[in-house]
Image 1 (cartoon, rainbow, N blue to C red):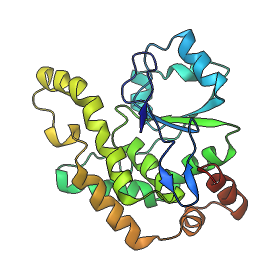
Image 2: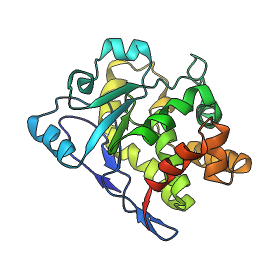
Image 3: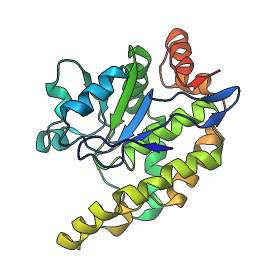
Length: 229
């Protein structure tokens, strides 16, 4: 797991370098991130020089209206808004977090645009929501799972978020003390319950992608992007 400084953006990390069957996940191919903020020319040059030219914004229409994604204004990037919002209602307790993740991961009309965009991307992909904690984590954990990364590494990648969002959430809770505390946590129980529930449904990445609406060619292209073999 490698954090990448990118403007004033929280929680930008490279999914490359995790051990998987036959090798490692590819470096600088998939970046997970919080909401991009205060990008500099150096940041843009870094992404372009590494062929990271596709950006997937997982936020809903109201979030996008409140904070415009800077990549949507940069013609050098292929920007896609693929909102991940299962039923329009936030989880009401910590016990609802993992089931909410599972709905996002297994509802074709929600997740298929993400996989289709990744398959069609000419180079690397940066994907983000607001904090890079929940929706981003669902996509990241599934990419690692599809690459054959072990469960312990997938859980570790998830909980690293807690360190990177700790201070922003502390500030937010100070000004908004009524905000549900469980929504500020990257709790290992959320991702482990999700992983275990998902794994009981799907064991093969190709079967999963095709169940989500991907054709055989798209599936093959996406899976080849995941690792160095």
